[in-house]
Image (tube, rainbow, N blue to C red; front, side, top):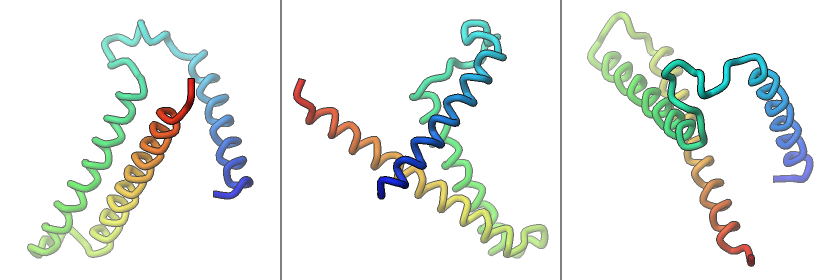
Length: 111
């Protein structure tokens, strides 16, 4: 990744952080979330994996329905859902790879 690409990604992350901080001041504290699960990295990671799994299951179901001749499922729906599932899976693989690389870098640091 080039330096300009890294700087662009950093600026986007800072903008999202600023936006999230603005939203956080307008909402209730986490302790008063009325039974909702607490947010955190592990929960977000699990939710992302579940979304990827859901997209893959939807894609498989539509593919099977199309193959069986279901008139309610068109080829373009099958293709779009297949692409969504593929892109989501690739994103998950890239996140995993970056997490492994970050872990390795942290483990190689001299304290």
